[in-house]
Length: 168
Image 1 (spheres, one colour):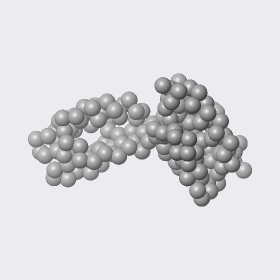
Image 2 (cartoon, rainbow, N blue to C red; image 1 turned 180 degrees about the vertical axis):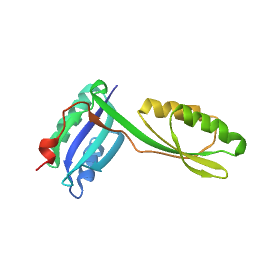
Image 3 (cartoon, helix red, strand yellow; image 1 turned 90 degrees about the horizontal axis):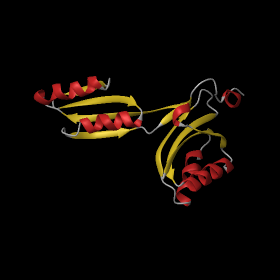
């Protein structure tokens, strides 16, 4: 099974997310990760979609996405040719005795403590999926009260961009 991360430039119109996610659900494809945000031109949004499947299925997904009216451009974010990141917020139960141990893990990963309460810490970490997974694994001995992950977002490295589309 392979994994593909797509950066999809779409017209920023009502229902575009529904139409794209509908394509996946109608065909029984699962989305591993999805993030969407407006670009520097408010006429367009960028969707970053991570999907897993057999190579034939992944190629089918790409072709079907390209047929959608709202889709302007699709780029695959290849590991060696792009930078992909994810944000995680974790609320960890930590009394006075546990706090120092959690802070050590935070420091190792260059994470930030963004909220402190008498019995918990909220931690913010940005990085690739492997870094976030390793961070969460080191917190295994602690009670994680809540966790939220943004999903992958990324850009192709170097000078290549979508300026031709967004500047009009």
